[in-house]
Image 1: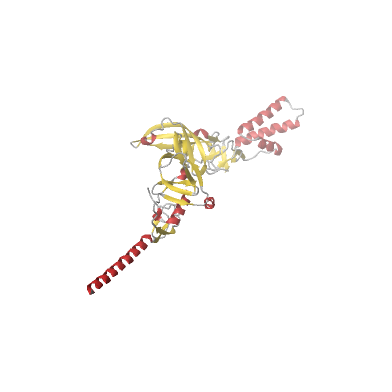
Image 2: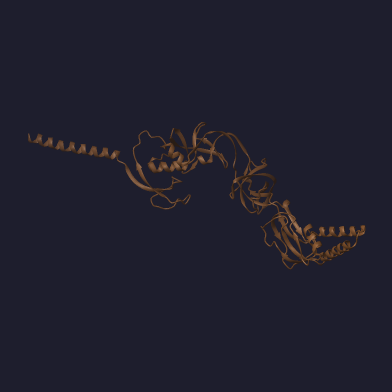
Length: 405
């Protein structure tokens, strides 16, 4: 009897231990494992155990509480955001469809002066440059702006002759044909020297010659070369200043043979400059020729670009995109594709619920990117605010909720 009682007590104790252990394990199976880490609001794939800056965009990392829970039946990364929050976040969507897009085999190029647009301003007379109004290159020169003042005995002699004939004409009534012809010839000579109507009129009014004659720019453009200094003696026809109009510029690029593939038949290009992000310039190929340089063959491309607004400045680095068209491909705006550990997009699953999907991409340009897998026509993707949705997803559920399928 004592043995039976002893066995009963032992059995009771063991059963109690098993029940307590089972309850504990059951509690642990539903218990959340919490912790924290630091991530970037714009690049949620960045995770760090300590505070710091994002290695991608240099923003300060934010602290996130990590929660890992059992989500039975959960497929993919899903988040629900009400309409009000979507409006505040500026979330915009677009429907996936087939499009015709241009490829973006981006070539780096440099804006250069179009030599056809360069004008050389030469000295109109022999003499000494006493005052120079344009000293530096790169300065924009308006038509009619003073360039230089010159002391020229030859010019003063012609001015004196003109004033002498003019004085004779004032005292002779009526003016003889000879005097009239001499007066006209003297004025024409001053005009050919480059004096303006205003300068000749002032000469006639004052009746005195000028020791210095100022000459003005006959062209508008950027000063690309200055060949004179104050005090320098020049001959008639000596080149003084070069002025370049930027209404049309070259874009020059160098390519290696492996980069020229597929470009042989392309004659038109799009040009983008970081200094004018909203502008798309059209360019036409005018020169393409392979040259040998230090044992390497390179291709020189020279593209003519209309620059009537004058915003493309020589020396500026630009991106050149051949206008090669790809027709009837599935494409979305580039802003829809997130470049984290993999390429993903957020798709509107239904109502206010968004699902993150991994995609594979093909050709792309500045605006569009081809989707080769992961989406189908009719899917609605987030085009603005996708990074904000990723950040909200991370903040709400922690890294443990991300399913990188």
